[in-house]
Amino acid sequence: MDTNLYPLKFMPLFKNKIWGGNRIKELGFDYDPLPNCGEMWVLSAVPGNESVVSNGFLAENTLDEVLEIYMGELVGERNYERFGNQFPLLIKIIDANDKLSIQVHPDDKLAQERGMDNGKTEMWYIIDAEKGSEIVDGFDMELTTEDYKKVVELGRLEKVLHVEHPEPGDVFFIPAGRVHALGSGLLLAEIQQSSDCTYRIYDYNRPGDDGKLRQLHTAEALAAIDFSQLKDGKTHYRQQVNATNNLVECPYFTTNLIPLNKPMRKDFSQLDSFVIYLCTQGICAVKTMDQITPLHAGECVLVPATAQIVELFSQGTAQLLEVYIDPEQYKGEYTHANDNDWVAHFIGDPDKVE
Image: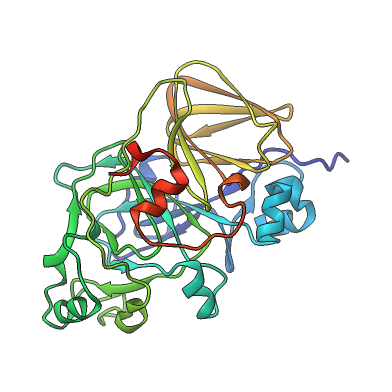
């Protein structure tokens, strides 16, 4: 039997949330008997939530089992040196039918000090947004730790938050330390470090499934929060059809947008990384390693690092997010600084951060 690696598809994991809706069902996914699906984990190696392969001879194996066998062949030799047998990314589709809690994630240093493997830097790509939808993205003014404690004590946290009104196609990069929250009426893709660590700092006095107020992590969050002012958290990018449009580059992931209406060929022979294609709109196919993998909105394929040439096809108009980890983005020592200067430094294009 041929035991060579090939493009991998996975069975999604569905998460019922008190704020979740039913739009993921409209993408063609069945999550019965759950009453809603707030999060669909498209690709995950989070312990207890490992994605299971759905195609080929590796079907029914988990992502971490495949990684343990194929190591650098799957993720790239330098990525394997950095992350070992821990797959480094978590990919979700989120349906926010109601407000999510206001929260913050720790960076790597703080997370490791607290016994976790890593922190959580993430990004959002807005697939759809109802009119008037909002997101919380940082603070609307510069705060000190004492300022923050005071507004929390007075119940006035919402008064100091920076609010944006997202539209389809908008991108928001959320570095670890930035206070953030999704509002209602949003369908989006989330690319993040493989971590499920969240400090909830405000939840609108909303009860959980047990009828009790959900736990807040006020004390734990203090050391994680970046208290600087944010004037514009939106990533400004240029969009071209049948081209690779860069959205985010950082030591944790690179994400590109590919709007597609004709075949496209890509050469990854110089990239020492896996590549994930997540379809966000339409129907498409990924051809590589002598295999063709069809995708519809909400599905992804994991292309192994050993693949060199990838061809993309669409049925009419489609849209793909292309995600990988470029070892050149984290060469040398790296110290996390929760500010836009850090983002600009790694993106290398001052026009993308304002």
